[in-house]
Amino acid sequence: MILQASAATDVGMRRRVNEDRYALVPDLGLYLVADGMGGHKAGQLASQLAAESAVRAAQALEGAPVSLAERLRQVVACANRDIFTMAQAQPEYSGMGTTMVAILAGEGRVALAHVGDSRAYLVRDGRIRPLTDDHSLVGELLRRNQITEEAAREHPHRHVLTRALGVRASVQGDLIEMSPRDGDVFAMMSDGLTNHVSDHEIAGAITNTDDLQQACNALVDFANDRGGDDNITVVLVRCEKAGVA
Image (cartoon, rainbow, N blue to C red; front, side, top):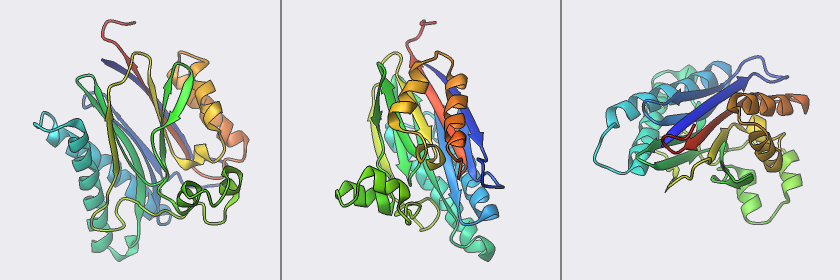
């Protein structure tokens, strides 16, 4: 399996600082998006720590005799520990945290881990399927059918997370492992994009071009054209069979 990946990030139209981070590490099969919280410096630091810690952990676990999902679980745990430790050691960073959505690929399989309200989708044969459920107050209300999708977009507490990396000494991430098909695209993004762009539009941007970077840029432009009220980040990873151009 060959992976092709592209990414784009933008501060948006209303923020001064970009607290989003992403990582593309093809040698490890690791790709992720993190969206920091806790104030400008703290949010930036939390997402940066998440990305750097995840890469170090994935390197240390490379070749470990465990499943991809277990390796990714440990990657998430390491990132959480490093952020929490920093927040405990330095009062100015108290309460900082970050979302993270990540995939780890190898030997024809892909594992996905998710904490927070950054999202992952699978785009297959022109159709899009969510792979994550938001760990947020509004996400809980939606799952209980207590509010509509339209109401969720304008809910005053839509940014309140029920899970994030670094806030507590341990965190439970959602994990799945699957076998991708040739042509599958995994799309990971922060809520600065999904707050403005529908699932249908995400699928359209990806399927309307073979150029992943063009699709990433188009999605960022969509979000900015509609207000861009948060940082915007997207990572696209396409799976291709070995030997397929």
